[in-house]
Length: 277
Image (cartoon, rainbow, N blue to C red):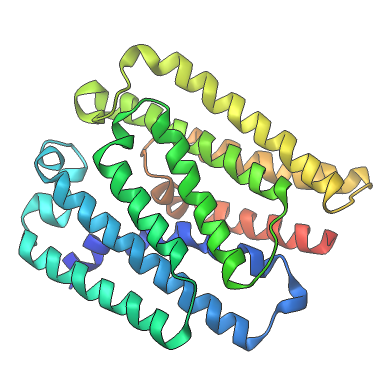
């Protein structure tokens, strides 16, 4: 059972909380029904993501066995066979279909997410900088899926903030792959000579995201009191600096789970934004 949980990467479901952000930012539609729909939509998206993870592990099986960290995954370590993984994949697919069948949650975004991930697995992740754009696109799909579920219109400023902050995180991931594992095990198009450029891009994209966040405060939330700007920016900067300072892993989810205070700060940021609305 533990091997199956590791195979479907339940911890990585944390990224899918972004689906609930449109609901959380609209207190006027809070209800038990929407909470229920939100939970099952989160579950459907997470199960779809797990299908992608399993497919990716099957495709990358041989290279994962040579990787210092990924060799410990269930398929690469041999604790689960490929046949068992395919069975789990099919079961997850049936569960997603059943959720759609009984609750009639939006399905097309899930299909687009799955197909885009297939393209990423076989092509895009091997293309320098294109991979970063695609990873950011996956986060936008999560946000878009949440807005579709609750029939909400997303703020363009919020979307741009998510784009730039996730691009910064994605570039940081590629940088850490090179720093921790070198060219041989990074399995990407990046080389050691790209390290300085990746560092500059990480910082630049992060600073742009901070600028867009402040534009979101001004034009969307109509914040005019400078005290709130100071508090919100301090919380955002503290969160990001603490997150980017830890270079022990290239996995953003592992870094978040390693520092629970960052999750707490994220919740505080959300509450402050809600207070502004």
